[in-house]
Image (cartoon, rainbow, N blue to C red):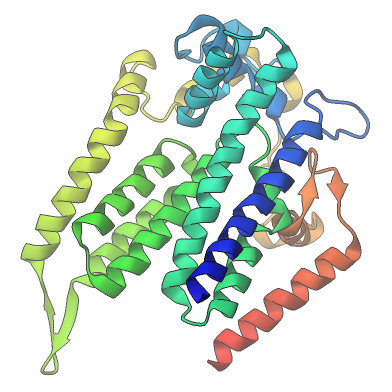
Amino acid sequence: MRQKSEKYFFIIYILGFLVMALSVALFQPLADVPPFFPNPPDEHARYLVPKYICEHGVIPTGFEEEIRIPSYGFSYALYNAFPYIIQGYVMRFVSLFTDSEVALLYAARGVNVFFGMLMAAVVYLIGRRLFRDRRFRWVFCFAVTYLPENIFVHTYVNTDSCCMLSTAMIFYALVCSYQDGFTRANRLWLSGGIILCALSYYNAYGYILSSILLFLAYFLNKKDGYWTYDWKKMLKQGCFISAVVLLGIGWWFIRSYIVLDGDLLGLKTRRLMAEQYAIELVNPLTMNTFRDMGYSVWEMMSEKNTLKEALYSFIAVFGSMSIYGSQWTYRFYKLFFTLGALCLLSG
């Protein structure tokens, strides 16, 4: 009976996410509409990459003029493009049945909704590992998956959605490994998470570094008052994970090295393109950064309301950082996070 109710809860949990995510994906606009800007952040620029793949059937190099962001002068194709590749080929499949631009856009967004559904399933697996009491497990699952900003991230064309899935996989793999050891299954979970993270978003590489440090720390043991390190086991299991990861990501970085003349991450190429094609306001040669204007990190955080905006955008800010939720939404989550932190400290 208990297993049956757990199954029903899981179905409701997944279907609820799909209904919300699909609703947002279908009804939010694509184009910039000043001065309100209700479109998802940068989607009009990101969408150029899967659209190119759909039309031409090949991965762009990043130099193509048709995918270059007009004002900034570079293309998102210079970055990790794995999610765009999936979106592009799904769009290409859909284009066999219709040439509707709206249908193709929905196909691209649908890929990220699917990534979000997979993330929801992984979050549930994490909850099963962390909480014996299923009431706390479901509070955890709904709190993570149904966070308004999390749902929003999975509803438009970006690489963040795949990245969120990858970080959940990494976290799940580490939880399982610290409980059961680095079994083959756990190593594959960790490898898969690292591969998706490496191919989706540079800003999330801190998760990869953290997973490496936690992996290395696992083999440090204290026995009879002395610290020992199991180098043999670490090297054996570490080489397995490294080999799988290199097989999974090698193709992209080898391609980048060839196409971008040795620029593995595309960052140097991005700057050169921006210097050549970007408008004056955002051109690296002429624009002023906070550092150029003499701001310290603290001044930037306080005077520009960066901390407040970061907190709000973590909870619920939609459109191009232009649509805010009710003040009660932010108050609820502030209270929820504070109570959670207090419970953690008291435990």
